Image (tube, rainbow, N blue to C red; front, side, top):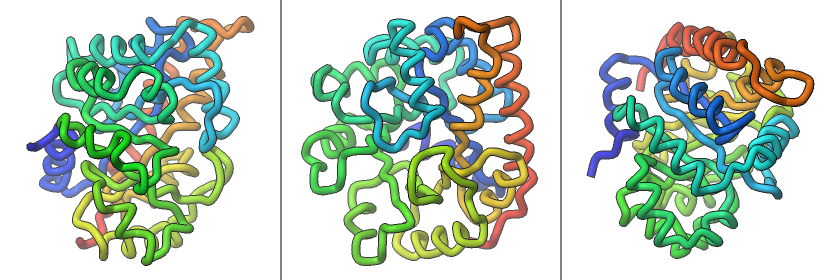
Length: 278
């Protein structure tokens, strides 16, 4: 079965360019503004959209994304409303892949079987669940694959050649390479180090490799995209949301357009990359 993610990467490969993957927290700063921002992303150049599922106890998220999650929770965001957000996006866009990113706890509480049915029905294409290692594939990974969703795994600088086959075993859609050790937004990715890591992962898999964590500018995005199949930007986008809220943390007339402007600039960076030969 070909998912929207598979189709999008095949299309980009034909075009000879990398994907620009954006991350936003569902419901930040409120559900209506969040939907407006997400709807603006494809027109601004996003090829794949990752949507964070707000959670009270994140582990991999830096201060900016943690704060975005707390703003969303304060605005009443739930996992059910996150799926409604995806459904709202799908009314106007049936092509752009949507990946939900987050932690297992909210899905476990929701009920795995019910979540997978509802996620598929809403128009979700893939999942990135940060705290489920390959040893726990029976919990969610295998049922998700059976339901027709891609299960996207994280590889990190500490994922050595011995561990990599286990990480890749049931991965589909793409591999998400975390470019730094630590939390999101903590450092800038080193494009040379990343290029070596991407080449190493590609020796083990035919899947596209996208790189996230540490990409904040069009220049860094371009440098990463020259060797990876995609560049993922989250913290920089979430920071622009926060910078365009009022003193009470509410959306302003500039919130959506400010995000769209940054995404356009980042997308131009990715599309300006000279592709390394496969």
